[in-house]
Amino acid sequence: MSPPRPRRTSDHDARPSRGIPEATVARLPVYLRALTALGDRGIATASSEELARAAGVNSAKLRKDLSYLGSYGTRGVGYDVEYLRYQIAREIGLTQDWPVIIVGIGNLGHALANYSGFASRGFGIVGLLDADPARVGEQVGDYVIKAYNELERVVEEYGVAIGVIATPATAAQEVCDRMVAAGITSVLNFAPVVLKVPAGVDVRKVDLSTELQILAYHEQRKALSQPGRLDHVDGVATERSPVIP
Image 1 (cartoon, rainbow, N blue to C red):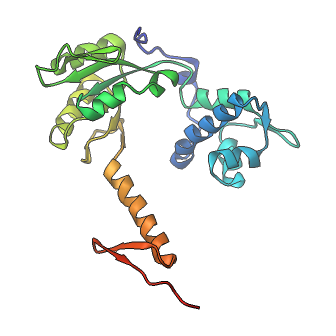
Image 2 (image 1 turned 45 degrees about the vertical axis):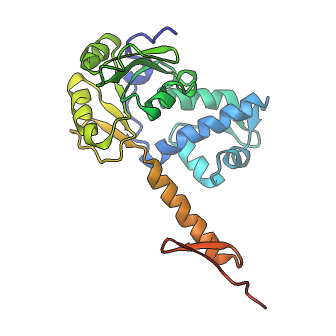
Image 3 (image 1 turned 90 degrees about the horizontal axis):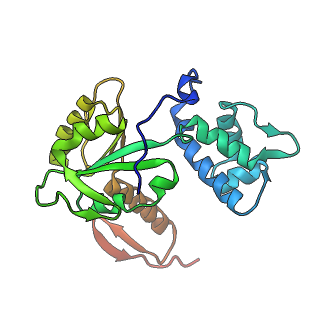
Protein backbone atom coordinates (compact mmCIF):
# COMPACT_ATOMS: atom_id res chain seq x y z
CA MET A 1 0.00 0.00 0.00
CA SER A 2 1.45 3.34 -1.03
CA PRO A 3 1.41 5.96 1.74
CA PRO A 4 -0.12 9.35 0.96
CA ARG A 5 2.16 12.16 0.01
CA PRO A 6 2.89 14.94 2.49
CA ARG A 7 -0.10 17.19 3.05
CA ARG A 8 -0.16 20.23 0.84
CA THR A 9 -2.17 23.39 1.18
CA SER A 10 -5.44 23.04 -0.72
CA ASP A 11 -8.13 25.45 -1.83
CA HIS A 12 -10.03 24.44 1.28
CA ASP A 13 -7.16 25.56 3.52
CA ALA A 14 -7.16 28.99 1.89
CA ARG A 15 -10.82 29.66 2.56
CA PRO A 16 -11.70 31.67 5.66
CA SER A 17 -13.35 29.87 8.56
CA ARG A 18 -17.14 29.97 8.51
CA GLY A 19 -17.35 29.84 12.28
CA ILE A 20 -19.35 26.61 12.30
CA PRO A 21 -20.38 25.57 15.84
CA GLU A 22 -18.55 22.53 17.26
CA ALA A 23 -21.82 20.63 17.68
CA THR A 24 -22.54 21.09 13.98
CA VAL A 25 -18.99 20.04 13.02
CA ALA A 26 -19.51 16.85 15.04
CA ARG A 27 -22.65 16.04 13.04
CA LEU A 28 -21.20 16.70 9.57
CA PRO A 29 -19.50 13.26 9.37
CA VAL A 30 -22.87 11.71 10.31
CA TYR A 31 -24.55 13.53 7.42
CA LEU A 32 -21.72 12.48 5.12
CA ARG A 33 -22.18 8.83 6.08
CA ALA A 34 -25.94 9.10 5.52
CA LEU A 35 -25.44 10.73 2.11
CA THR A 36 -22.94 8.04 1.11
CA ALA A 37 -25.44 5.34 2.07
CA LEU A 38 -28.19 7.06 0.07
CA GLY A 39 -25.89 7.40 -2.93
CA ASP A 40 -24.94 3.73 -2.73
CA ARG A 41 -28.66 2.91 -2.98
CA GLY A 42 -28.93 4.96 -6.18
CA ILE A 43 -30.86 7.83 -4.60
CA ALA A 44 -30.05 11.07 -6.44
CA THR A 45 -32.06 13.56 -4.39
CA ALA A 46 -33.33 13.54 -0.81
CA SER A 47 -35.57 15.85 1.17
CA SER A 48 -34.40 17.26 4.49
CA GLU A 49 -36.80 14.86 6.22
CA GLU A 50 -35.35 11.85 4.37
CA LEU A 51 -31.77 12.89 5.02
CA ALA A 52 -32.52 13.67 8.67
CA ARG A 53 -34.13 10.26 9.12
CA ALA A 54 -31.11 8.56 7.55
CA ALA A 55 -28.78 10.52 9.85
CA GLY A 56 -30.88 10.02 12.99
CA VAL A 57 -31.54 13.71 13.71
CA ASN A 58 -34.57 15.97 13.36
CA SER A 59 -35.01 17.84 10.09
CA ALA A 60 -34.95 21.31 11.67
CA LYS A 61 -31.53 20.64 13.19
CA LEU A 62 -30.26 19.26 9.90
CA ARG A 63 -31.43 22.30 7.93
CA LYS A 64 -29.81 24.66 10.43
CA ASP A 65 -26.55 22.69 10.34
CA LEU A 66 -26.44 22.72 6.54
CA SER A 67 -27.21 26.44 6.46
CA TYR A 68 -23.71 27.07 7.81
CA LEU A 69 -22.31 25.52 4.64
CA GLY A 70 -24.47 27.46 2.19
CA SER A 71 -27.71 27.00 0.26
CA TYR A 72 -27.50 23.57 -1.31
CA GLY A 73 -31.16 22.54 -1.17
CA THR A 74 -33.95 23.27 -3.65
CA ARG A 75 -37.43 23.93 -2.31
CA GLY A 76 -39.82 21.19 -3.37
CA VAL A 77 -36.97 19.01 -4.67
CA GLY A 78 -34.55 18.54 -1.80
CA TYR A 79 -30.80 18.04 -1.82
CA ASP A 80 -28.67 16.67 -4.63
CA VAL A 81 -27.10 13.75 -2.77
CA GLU A 82 -23.74 13.65 -4.57
CA TYR A 83 -23.28 17.42 -4.65
CA LEU A 84 -24.07 17.84 -0.96
CA ARG A 85 -21.83 14.88 -0.17
CA TYR A 86 -18.96 16.60 -1.97
CA GLN A 87 -19.59 19.93 -0.25
CA ILE A 88 -19.58 18.36 3.22
CA ALA A 89 -16.47 16.32 2.41
CA ARG A 90 -14.79 19.51 1.18
CA GLU A 91 -15.84 21.44 4.28
CA ILE A 92 -14.36 18.89 6.69
CA GLY A 93 -11.21 18.40 4.64
CA LEU A 94 -11.82 15.00 3.07
CA THR A 95 -11.05 16.03 -0.50
CA GLN A 96 -7.35 15.61 0.25
CA ASP A 97 -5.24 12.88 1.83
CA TRP A 98 -4.33 13.07 5.53
CA PRO A 99 -1.25 11.11 6.64
CA VAL A 100 -1.74 9.53 10.07
CA ILE A 101 0.58 7.82 12.54
CA ILE A 102 -0.45 5.40 15.27
CA VAL A 103 1.68 5.05 18.41
CA GLY A 104 1.13 1.95 20.56
CA ILE A 105 0.58 -1.24 18.58
CA GLY A 106 -1.04 -3.52 21.10
CA ASN A 107 -4.39 -5.19 20.51
CA LEU A 108 -6.14 -1.86 19.91
CA GLY A 109 -3.34 -0.56 17.71
CA HIS A 110 -3.54 -3.74 15.62
CA ALA A 111 -7.28 -3.28 15.17
CA LEU A 112 -6.87 0.36 14.15
CA ALA A 113 -4.10 -0.49 11.68
CA ASN A 114 -6.30 -3.12 10.04
CA TYR A 115 -9.38 -0.89 9.83
CA SER A 116 -10.11 -0.34 6.13
CA GLY A 117 -12.36 2.65 6.82
CA PHE A 118 -9.39 4.98 7.29
CA ALA A 119 -8.08 4.67 3.74
CA SER A 120 -11.52 4.84 2.15
CA ARG A 121 -12.10 8.18 3.87
CA GLY A 122 -8.80 9.76 2.97
CA PHE A 123 -6.75 8.88 6.06
CA GLY A 124 -3.59 7.04 5.11
CA ILE A 125 -1.47 5.39 7.78
CA VAL A 126 2.18 6.30 7.20
CA GLY A 127 3.60 4.92 10.40
CA LEU A 128 2.92 2.37 13.13
CA LEU A 129 5.28 3.05 16.03
CA ASP A 130 5.94 1.16 19.22
CA ALA A 131 8.46 1.56 22.07
CA ASP A 132 8.99 -2.19 22.45
CA PRO A 133 12.13 -3.14 20.46
CA ALA A 134 10.77 -6.68 20.10
CA ARG A 135 7.86 -5.35 18.06
CA VAL A 136 9.93 -3.37 15.56
CA GLY A 137 9.81 -4.97 12.12
CA GLU A 138 6.62 -6.90 12.87
CA GLN A 139 4.12 -6.96 10.02
CA VAL A 140 0.62 -5.67 10.81
CA GLY A 141 -1.62 -5.92 7.78
CA ASP A 142 0.01 -3.83 5.06
CA TYR A 143 2.37 -2.09 7.46
CA VAL A 144 5.60 -2.74 9.34
CA ILE A 145 6.00 -1.49 12.90
CA LYS A 146 8.69 1.16 13.26
CA ALA A 147 10.67 2.15 16.34
CA TYR A 148 9.10 4.85 18.49
CA ASN A 149 12.24 6.97 18.16
CA GLU A 150 11.47 7.38 14.44
CA LEU A 151 8.42 9.50 15.25
CA GLU A 152 10.00 12.84 14.36
CA ARG A 153 11.40 11.53 11.09
CA VAL A 154 8.07 10.07 9.98
CA VAL A 155 6.16 13.24 10.91
CA GLU A 156 8.57 15.40 8.93
CA GLU A 157 8.82 13.07 5.94
CA TYR A 158 5.08 12.73 5.39
CA GLY A 159 3.87 16.07 6.76
CA VAL A 160 1.80 14.35 9.43
CA ALA A 161 -0.72 16.56 11.22
CA ILE A 162 -2.82 13.83 12.88
CA GLY A 163 -1.56 11.35 15.44
CA VAL A 164 -3.38 8.47 17.12
CA ILE A 165 -2.44 7.38 20.65
CA ALA A 166 -3.25 3.77 21.53
CA THR A 167 -0.80 3.36 24.40
CA PRO A 168 -1.43 2.59 28.08
CA ALA A 169 -2.52 5.63 30.11
CA THR A 170 0.87 5.97 31.80
CA ALA A 171 2.62 6.65 28.49
CA ALA A 172 -0.03 8.74 26.76
CA GLN A 173 0.98 12.21 27.95
CA GLU A 174 4.64 11.70 27.06
CA VAL A 175 3.67 10.43 23.62
CA CYS A 176 1.32 13.38 23.13
CA ASP A 177 4.04 15.87 24.15
CA ARG A 178 6.46 14.30 21.69
CA MET A 179 3.87 14.36 18.91
CA VAL A 180 3.16 18.04 19.50
CA ALA A 181 6.87 18.88 19.63
CA ALA A 182 7.28 17.10 16.28
CA GLY A 183 4.60 19.27 14.69
CA ILE A 184 1.40 17.25 15.07
CA THR A 185 -1.56 19.53 15.78
CA SER A 186 -4.45 17.03 16.05
CA VAL A 187 -4.50 13.99 18.34
CA LEU A 188 -6.98 11.13 18.59
CA ASN A 189 -6.54 9.63 22.05
CA PHE A 190 -7.69 6.10 22.95
CA ALA A 191 -5.81 6.03 26.26
CA PRO A 192 -8.01 6.43 29.38
CA VAL A 193 -6.46 9.71 30.46
CA VAL A 194 -7.07 13.42 29.90
CA LEU A 195 -4.23 14.92 27.89
CA LYS A 196 -2.85 18.42 28.38
CA VAL A 197 -1.96 20.19 25.16
CA PRO A 198 -0.97 23.75 24.23
CA ALA A 199 -3.26 26.17 22.44
CA GLY A 200 -3.71 25.31 18.78
CA VAL A 201 -3.65 21.56 19.32
CA ASP A 202 -6.94 19.66 19.08
CA VAL A 203 -7.57 16.44 21.01
CA ARG A 204 -10.44 14.02 20.55
CA LYS A 205 -10.80 11.36 23.22
CA VAL A 206 -12.31 7.94 22.57
CA ASP A 207 -13.05 6.21 25.87
CA LEU A 208 -14.72 2.85 25.25
CA SER A 209 -15.38 2.16 28.93
CA THR A 210 -17.16 5.51 29.32
CA GLU A 211 -19.35 4.79 26.30
CA LEU A 212 -20.26 1.38 27.75
CA GLN A 213 -21.16 3.00 31.08
CA ILE A 214 -23.45 5.44 29.28
CA LEU A 215 -25.15 2.51 27.55
CA ALA A 216 -25.46 0.75 30.92
CA TYR A 217 -27.21 3.83 32.31
CA HIS A 218 -29.76 3.78 29.49
CA GLU A 219 -30.28 0.03 29.87
CA GLN A 220 -30.94 0.48 33.57
CA ARG A 221 -33.44 3.27 32.88
CA LYS A 222 -35.25 1.04 30.40
CA ALA A 223 -35.24 -1.86 32.83
CA LEU A 224 -36.70 0.25 35.63
CA SER A 225 -39.54 1.32 33.35
CA GLN A 226 -40.41 -2.19 32.14
CA PRO A 227 -41.82 -4.73 34.61
CA GLY A 228 -40.21 -8.14 34.57
CA ARG A 229 -36.88 -7.00 33.12
CA LEU A 230 -33.64 -7.81 34.88
CA ASP A 231 -32.32 -4.83 36.82
CA HIS A 232 -28.79 -4.18 38.01
CA VAL A 233 -28.86 -2.00 41.08
CA ASP A 234 -25.70 -1.39 43.12
CA GLY A 235 -24.02 -4.18 41.19
CA VAL A 236 -26.61 -6.80 42.22
CA ALA A 237 -28.87 -8.36 39.63
CA THR A 238 -32.49 -8.55 40.74
CA GLU A 239 -35.71 -9.53 39.05
CA ARG A 240 -38.57 -7.07 39.45
CA SER A 241 -41.98 -8.46 40.10
CA PRO A 242 -44.56 -7.71 37.40
CA VAL A 243 -46.95 -4.90 38.15
CA ILE A 244 -50.47 -6.31 38.44
CA PRO A 245 -53.08 -3.86 37.17
